[in-house]
Amino acid sequence: MKLSKEYRYHILCEDVQTRTFIESFLHALDISFRRIHSNMAPKGENCGEQYVRKYLYSEAKLIVNCNYQKLTLIVCTDADINEVQQRRKQLLDQLRADSEKDSKGAPIDVEKECIMIWIPKRQIENWIHFLRNEDVTEDIDYRHSGSRPESCKDEAQKIMEYFQNMIAFEKVLPSLSVAKGEYERVCRLQNSR
Image 1 (cartoon, rainbow, N blue to C red):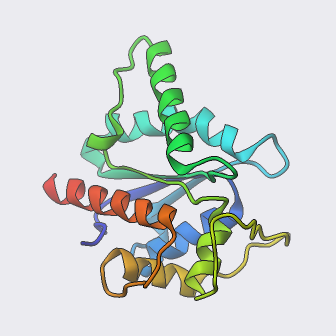
Image 2: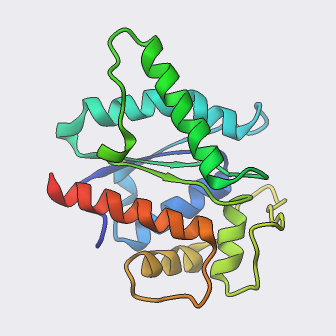
């Protein structure tokens, strides 16, 4: 399964490293950078996770209301010290609450929309280090501390190959396995429309 080149992709994420990783992943799928739009938390302003929760409804509403335009939303927020399912519940609770506040808004069922939610346990750097074949757990903080994002083109290529079952890992990070399920679900939705 592969994401469609006919779709445009909106990315909602916490930081420049995450944006770089997702854009590299989409490029590994031969999706043109012209088809990618990113909405990232401004550097130095509040918490990136709060930013993602704040803008999730407006981005999701755009995907739902512009179904004829073939849009897909990729949401990526770190689980940090929380569990992946706990962070997902927080996101979906916020989405539900924002839907209820909007008098014109109908509840958005993420499972039925081209909305992919990735939640790396700790942060995206854990996935990057894992994909470099490093002995990585989801309990260690691998946060990148530089002012510029790390290059992650090779790691993005590997995750693309893993998601398409071109490669397998003996032991995979649980949060990466959940992300693969999200990828497959969105691919099926795209193919059915």
